[in-house]
Figure 1 (cartoon, one colour):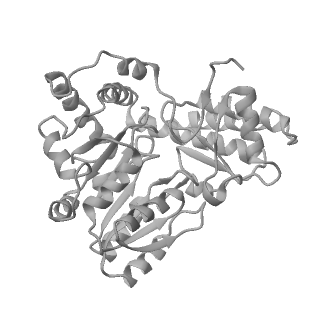
Figure 2: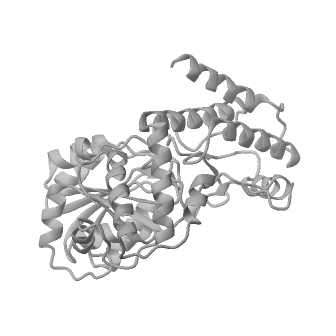
Figure 3: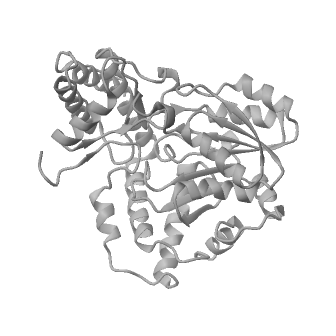
Length: 386
């Protein structure tokens, strides 16, 4: 392993394209000058297709968790009732945020590794007719589950007048998202995953019906107030000091995404996920999620005859490859591979090859090349469908 070589294959933060790094290294500009106005004019329009919306995309200098809290504090008042679909650690984070703001939570707990069920959600909404919002995680990073948010939105709007609020942090930009068409009322994401940037920017969009609730909400908020951000965005400005260098990088990242095309981006992510899953199926190593529930941006592996932590340590020490472990009660039980953003099928093949070597080194008996061959075959099969 070379001293400075680091292969990052976790579900965020993700690798940064060299041209984006170069853009962020440009000389600093004034955050209230004409250059910033022009920068915001460009990025605010190019963000809309990624969300699948005609609405404004608000840009915060903040983390993904700040975006989750922003959605809560702007859309719900203390004492109001909400349903939170918990399919993993980040659905649970919505619960913790709502608890802090004294919001009454009805949890819909789903077995970790499974997607939310529409019928169960419908039953819960019928049992709680006063619910003001339903919160869901699009891609649950901790379990690599992709929840069927389109279908869940249909249930929410059929069974209630609640807003449907979606955490898209680990998939927007890598997974097809049609906010307006699907009836998603608030969608949030962060910069450090499929958007190919360092952490530090949060993006939030709200529907017309959500804005009516936000504007009438008397709950106090200052830095997270979505009304301030929308008003300033329409002036091509920000209410507070923005992360200028990250915005310069965002402009370049959006240019790369526009050049590749959203349809091609989504296909690339689906291909990488299919290659990864095919490799572990061929190696007879169990996956946490069913193929039907699997995320295009991250894969969770649940081995039954070797230690996830031993494998992660060998990969990091011998090859400079970092993959993620499990969270909460899955810590030590699974490992997760990120394949999103600045990542290609070639990167997946490298990762699978190194994992095979790592498995050999921790004493797992496999035939080298089995997983790589399956991933290659899957890639070629995908090409034949074009």
